[in-house]
Amino acid sequence: QVQLVESGGGLVQAGDSLRLSCTAALSGRTFSNYKMAWFRQAPGKEREFVAATSWTGRDTYYADSVKGRFTISSDNAKNTVYLQMTSLKPEDTAVYYCSAAMGGSYYLETSYDYWGQGTLVTVSS
Image (cartoon, rainbow, N blue to C red):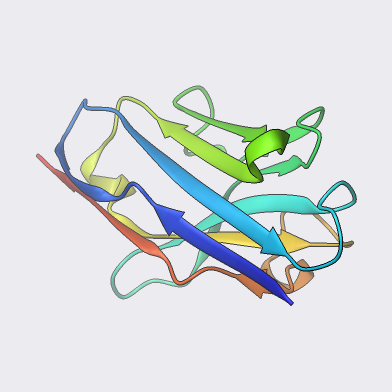
């Protein structure tokens, strides 16, 4: 059983920064072979890929829309993945979901087996 719990969402102004956290719990196993990702879903839109990382943090991947502004990282000791978001824009407003996968493409939603409940980020102009 894998449990993912996101936190850190909130209401910010355009240009502000925010850090999301995703704490993972995996009974009886380690996350060393997992890939972790953040997706987001804006109102009225489909869920989209934001960023992903191998659990070691060696490999990272970003959507073009967030490249240079968002940074994904992991703290293995805390079983936590972060999404540092800077220079936020109103179009970043969405529910952000943390996800975990054993295999498949980093970019594809269908690769991910486990999902958190989501945390809302609202960016005002």
